Image 1 (cartoon, rainbow, N blue to C red):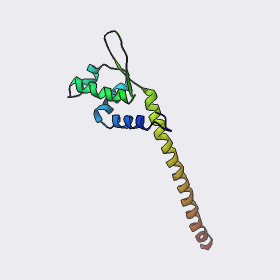
Image 2: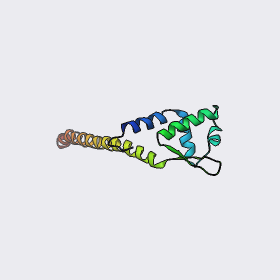
Image 3: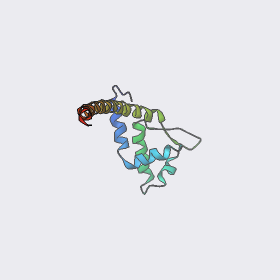
Image 4: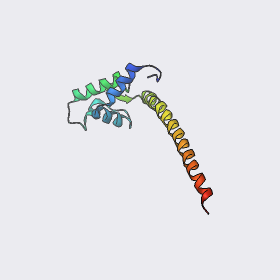
Length: 122
């Protein structure tokens, strides 16, 4: 997910994260890899439904699967989350700079208003 251009990838990530079940799966995977059965345990939905959620997360490149003998653990893709964080961060930095500029203007206005009063008081 390149902050400068992969709009379709960005849309897939936000669509994947829009679902609470998928966010819970991501939260679980942040503690380490898990199988579909392990991921399905806390949910009151079928393992097939959990598998479909995992497919959506895979399409968004938020998770990957590997093969470990007969197990197929699901892993969180931290690089994808870091790219998402970087994309969000660029807008946060722009807003922070705007707020710093606004703070400077407000401080200057406050200083200008308090300046003449300070001279007039005994």
